[in-house]
Length: 350
Figure (cartoon, rainbow, N blue to C red):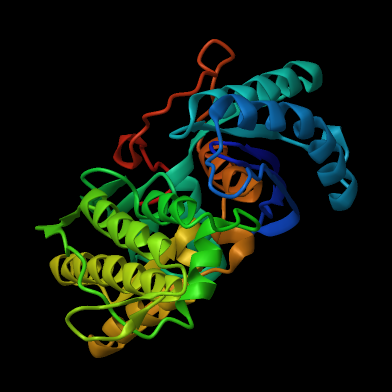
C-alpha cells in the first residue's frame, strides 16, 4: 500500500509518499519533501502568512513528490493529512488541499494526529519497541508511554512548549530564523562557558517554561545595554549572548531529562525515544543519553529529516490507521488546533 502525506501544522509544509509492503516488512520512504516559511529575524510567523505560503507551495510539492517517487496517482491508496494539533490557518490550508486531491483522484482521506505521526515515524526509523517518548517541539512538550491502545501522557508543559521558549528567546536576541531559531541557539550555546542561575520549574511530572523565558529576557535586556557583555556580580565573569543561550539550553533540557527519567522508572522502561523538532538538538540527545546509560538503558532519536515536521510521518501514521479500516469522511475532514495525543485509538498496536 502507498500513502501520500500532507503536513502543515506550523511553518513547515511537508509532502511525502510511503510504501508499506504486503509482507509486513519495513516501510519504504519513496519521497520526503519539505518547504519552510521563514520570517525575518526578531519576528515569529503569523498564521495568515504561513497559510498563504502553504497554499502557494502544496501543489508544487505534491507534483515533485510523485515524480521523485516514480509513483502514479493510480498507485496511491489514500491521502493522509494533519488534522491537528497546530495553527488554525495553516492546518485549514492543508486540509483543503487533502480534500481537493481526494475528490480529484477519488481517494480515501485519513486525518492524522500530528503527535502520533512523530511517534510512529520515530519508532519505524529507530526500531524502538516500547519506549518512553519525549515529544518536544515548538507547540508541544509531552512525556508519553503506550498502554492499552493509547499513547498516555505522563507529563507535559503547563504553559508554553520548550520549542516555543527557545524560539521566543531567539526573537529577543534577533537571531536568524534560517534554518531554524532553535538550531541557531544550539550553535551559539556550543561556545557558551558560563552557566547562569535561571528558574528550574519542575512540578511533579510537569514543566513550566514561561518563567524561565521571562527571567532570561531580563538578562538579555541587560546585555542589550552592554553589547560586548556585562560582568556577573556573583562570579565577576563577562557574560555574552552565547552564555545566555548555553544557560537556557542546559536548564530546560535538565528539566526534560528529569521528568523523562521519572516516567522510565514508573513504567519500568529502558528505552527513550526523542521526537519532534527540538529532538534534533545534539545537547538534548547527549544529556538524555547520559541519564539512560546510568539506568542501563538507551536513547533513540532521528535526524532532521524525520525530527522536524514532515509529510512522511503523516503518511506513515495514516497508512497504519488505514490498514485497520480507519478513514475520514469528507464531512469529517476538518482540522482542530487542539487534538491531544491520548485521544487517538491506536488500533494497529496490541
